[in-house]
Amino acid sequence: MLHKCFKCILTCPMLFVSSDTYMAFYLLQVQRIMRERFCHQKLPDKPYGLDSQYKHLLELLRRTAVHGESNSVLIVGPRGAGKTMLLRCALRELLELQEVKKNVLQVHLSGLLQTDDRIALKEITRQLHLENVVGDKVFGSFAENLVFLLEALKKGDKSSSRPVFFILDEFDLFAHHKNQTLLYNLLDVSQSAQAPVAVVGLTCRLVGLSPTDTSKLCEDKSVEEILQKSFNCSKDFRSLHLLLLLALSRVSVSNPTVRAADILEANRMSAADSKANILHGLSILELCLIIAMKHLNDIYEGEPFNFQMVHNEFKKFIQRKSHSIHNFEKPVVIKAFEHLLQLELIRPVDGGVCKVQREYQLMRLMLDHTQVMEALQRYPQCPTDVRQWAVSSFG
Image 1 (cartoon, rainbow, N blue to C red):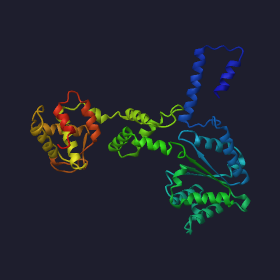
Image 2 (cartoon, rainbow, N blue to C red):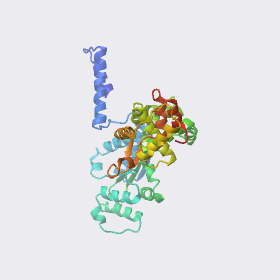
Image 3 (cartoon, helix red, strand yellow):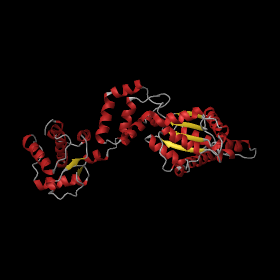
Image 4 (cartoon, rainbow, N blue to C red):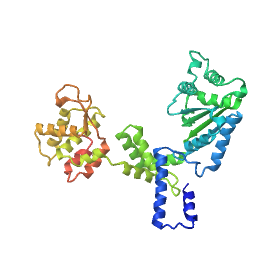
């Protein structure tokens, strides 16, 4: 489209444009196309750079839709490479044919949503609008149920069976279903010519790191420490996904695989830790209470604690090891403890609804060992005995 616009400008004999006007025109066209892509999800006329794949896929689907020929195809590529766009463009062009548009049926399944074959079969029934046909019928097997659905789509004789496109997103996840019943039966139908079907799978699992590259990464000590820290901070898979996505974004033609340096840089980019930054602004008393909580976590293996336990741990440090920390009165320590609660560095186990004395209310520390130690290293003018207490094995 841009080439056509430029050709129109440059071939017009009476039109003269400055370089600034030329660039402004170019940027406006780019902005318009990007808005259409991101805001309206408008597909391009044809996928760029995928001409041979596009023609092959279009022809395969056309044979199923027009000639009743069953086919199967697997579209493989990394996320964002254009697999779905390629398929949608082919379907759009195919459905411009009137005979195809009124006859072809589509069933879209996702391995993330249809997590077992029973759910998948129910979704196939729903998308084919055959709930009333199935009714309360009981089938002896998955295959029998699927064949019944396809038979119900026939208009009369076998030659007038309605073609069905089965589109399986996250195809690799269907391969993990027990006995692979869905895949086995769909592919069996496509091979036996029981009905005109096209099975289209989309997956990214066959493209990525080789086992050798993965082993090298996992053996790297710095990578292991980063992954352990990520696990300690959050057990949510999304935090790991973000870390690996940042690392993957550094892959290029010159660096075609993920390296340990990419993981380190991704960790640095995602390490904008708000809670760790809050620690730098705490008073020395509040920092000592955090260290006492860390020791309690180590001693009792993450079990919840209350203020009295933290205060006792802090008093032991003052009496045995500290030469620089003032022996604060208990009301002052309680005030510091409550400030940590307001900052959400600690959180009540019961959500604060349990009516017990505040000194005995159970709490959890919302920081892991690594966050505390890193913040301690950056804490301005931290007393030496406090640092030593933090790294010691026992409170």
